Amino acid sequence: MTKVVVTNGNIDGALKKLKVKVARSGVPSELKKHREYTKPGVKRREAKKEMIRNSRKRKRD
Image (cartoon, rainbow, N blue to C red):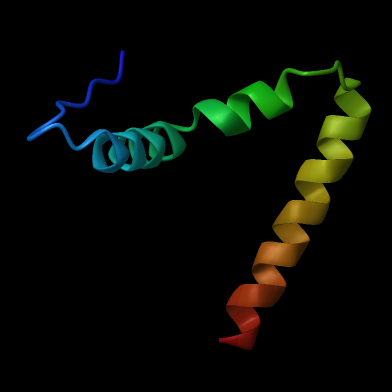
């Protein structure tokens, strides 16, 4: 469980820190992945496209 301590009554700052911690932990992306079922073949195709995209990015730099 992600925790943030509120100091000096600064709720806005604590909320901002909480949002950053949650985003870094990967919870939103996991929820997005599990929203609907994807077939194994579709997952493989998407992973292959992602690998190609990443390799092109690395070659560009």
